[in-house]
Each structure stands twice: as C-alpha cells, then as structure tokens.
Image 1 (cartoon, rainbow, N blue to C red):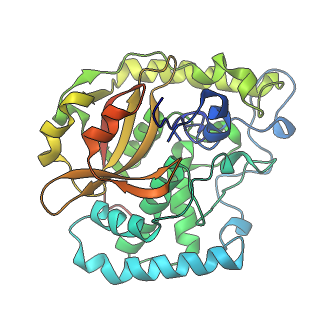
Image 2 (cartoon, rainbow, N blue to C red):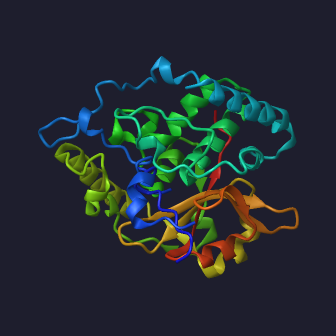
Length: 330
C-alpha cells in the first residue's frame, strides 16, 4: 500500500483528518481534530457536558509558550513571516513561505490527545498533517494582521481548532476535516472553492469514529464521550445535506492547476468507509505553474511532494481533493 494519512479521528477529531497511516493508528492521529471530553472530564449519565476546566476564553497558561524551545522556534519563524509579509500577495502565499521554514520537521502523531484534560497543544518541533496546516495558517494570519505575539498565535490556533472557536473539552475539537472547513469558513478564516472547481459530490456517511470506538482511547470505555461522538456525527450528517462538499477527482486535478494558489488548503478525499478526508496539506506553487503539496508526511516529515496530482494518484484510497482558500481576516 502507499502512504495513507488518516488524521480524521485524531485531529480530524482529529478523529478525522491526519506515508502510510494504518487504520490501527488512526485513533492516535485523529485524536487531534475531534473533541469529546476525556474520560476524566465526562459526565456519567451518557450525555456530553463541557470540560469544567474549559471556558470560552483561553486560560493564561496556554497564552505563553510551553517551553523555551517552542518559544525560540516560534520567535524565529514569526520573525521570518513578519519580514516577508509585504513581499507576498496573499495569506496563502505567506503560509507557503512559513511552511518551508518547517521543512524536515518530523511527523508527530496523536499529540493533541496526550493531555488527560483537553488543552491547547502547541508543538513546533514536529506535526501531523492537520496541525501543520493549522500552525502555518495561525502564524500567517497573525503576521498579516501585524501581530507577532505568541498569545495572538495561540488565540488564532484555538479559533481554528475548536467548534465556533471555543475550547470546551474534547467534543468541541473539530475532528472531521470537512467540519473543520465549514467551521473555519463560517468564521471567515477560509473560503471553500469546491463549487468553482466543479467535481463530484462527497456522499459518504461520516461515522468512522463511532464505528471504530475500540480504537479511540478517549471514549473506548466512556459511554458519555461515545454519546458525544455519536451526536457530533449525527449533526455532521445533517450539515452534509445542507452544505454538500465536492471534490476534484484525482485524474482531473492537473486540469485545475491554474485555479490553485500558493497556500490553498488541500484536503485529500478518501474512499475509506465513514471517513471524509485522510490527509491534508498546502498547495505548493512552483514558479513554472506546476502545483505540488507542502505537507507533513508520515514517512518524511514536512516536505514538498512536487506534483499534486501524481501524489494523490499514488496513494491508496485517495480519490481527489477539496480546496479551501485562506482569507486575510484577523
């Protein structure tokens, strides 16, 4: 089999969206995106309640770097971003510039699920495919707004990672990447352009997390969190009917290269039952008009795969791409 990144259930919840990601490790990868409270935070009556330690505003503890290494890494990359923000034509182009600063950083799976209680996890020493997209987007948004502070970065990261921008336990995390796209579009952070690109409608039922319960340590034995996940998926199915998503089939991607811009968010649609997206990255715009994928690869870490269509075609279970364009915002 080829490289497969399933981040859906970890950051895509990410139980959703995070080269060869075995189904056996989906849980670890997906824990990042979805968000039902950890067992220690859940109520016992089969209903999901917010983390008592969470609130609409972020705690002061996450508004400062978790350690000196992260502080130094952030300062270095943000300094680069601030120096180049006037040289780029869009927030996406700045995301590409920032992403290249992380080249060679290793792939780190399951980092969002490591804390016992949901908190804003920041790692700049390595990424999964979704945390890479989130990090470059939050840093680029800050630089474009003239805000180089770590606190501003943390707030923007939380806005992108949690439903309605509010961290309220595991279930508030955006586990499935199509919901991540919809939520961030509602906030004006990205704009989906799948309608402009045409393609096929995504019709698969989103239930991967609930149907693979035993693979998720967070809710494998916790009925309250499991109920939370089931409710989340039910809501997503309704949303899917109201706001259908279209993907460009893998053999047609090259035909839309001229419509793809540097730093566009790329979601790789998958044929895996119950899952919408199995990998994410950024459009890498070559000077000659070609389009590659700047992403966190399971096998090689942060890298550029030179041709986007060829990359998608060679990966098992990938059927096409969904594109969202980063917006200036704040």
